[in-house]
Amino acid sequence: MDLAGKTILVTGGAVRIGRSICEKLAQSGAQVIIHCRHSGREARELAARLKTPGHDAWVIQEDLDTEAGCESVISRAFELAGTLDGLVNNAAVFHRRSLSETDLTHLLGELRPNFFAPLLLIRAFIRRAQTGRIVNILDRRIATLETGSMAYQLSKRALADMTRLAALELAPAFTVNGVAPGPVLLPSDEKGCPRDKAGRIPTGRRPTPEEVADAVLTLLQADSVTGQILFVDGGQHLLGNGD
Ligand SMILES: NC(=O)c1ccc[n+]([C@@H]2O[C@H](COP(=O)([O-])OP(=O)(O)OC[C@H]3O[C@@H](n4cnc5c(N)ncnc54)[C@H](OP(=O)(O)O)[C@@H]3O)[C@@H](O)[C@H]2O)c1
Image (cartoon, rainbow, N blue to C red; front, top):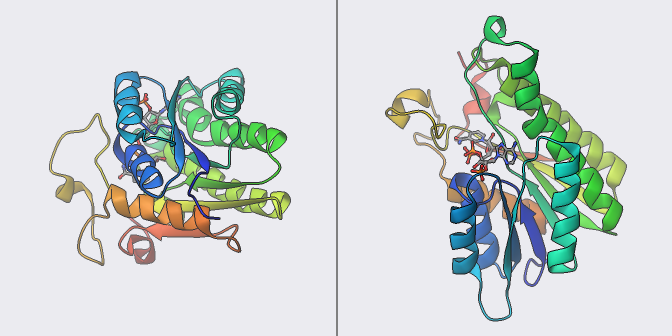
């Protein structure tokens, strides 16, 4: 699929990795719908920057923790743009908590945005569109065992399985793929030297947000690739147990 003139929705698209995805999409001639929750100002600034004559950019501000919120994002996307060609499920939360520290509230607090929301957004998207491209942002931890972020890892593993199941169920009308980043950016609520927390990276450096965005664009464009998970992690998933 040629991205020029296509409309792509990016959840959590206002800042960090999501912003890079939106910027690369706009550079490829796509029109972006930037979803955000708290980063409304950043989303509006980004939309203003990405708009060019003939190429629009829109903002949808919504909490993805509820089914109604997910339905509303997709219906508003169609209202604003008239069509939707692709969905990038990027929004997520991450908390460092071990199994013993994790209760049902914590579990649901990560499963809702990281797993339930992508599933509900996909369901709402396929109900309204005839064809389309979907990319779910995963994490290289789906391939390794790493203690200390139990709920997050379970949510991303479930999303990885859902990616493959959905790819099979929704073909040929939709492709569904995943991008699994390694340590790109420290969680926004954490301070410290990113290098210290990245662990061993075979290629020797952290992947950049732009490299994650390039992988997303490759999968959005590919006509014959579905159910694929592309690791952008400098080879960390090859190392086995991440601890
Ligand atoms: N950072 C990394 O190094 C890394 C590594 C591996 C995988 N990943 C994955 O890559 C993706 C992007 O990572 P990131 O670090 O850039 O993400 P992030 O900053 O942690 O989160 C992205 C956005 O998700 C939105 N969000 C969270 N909960 C939401 C909710 N309930 N409803 C609506 N929006 C919600 C927030 O939007 P607002 O700001 O508008 O509230 C937030 O800015 C995520 O899926 C993450 O799991 C990241």
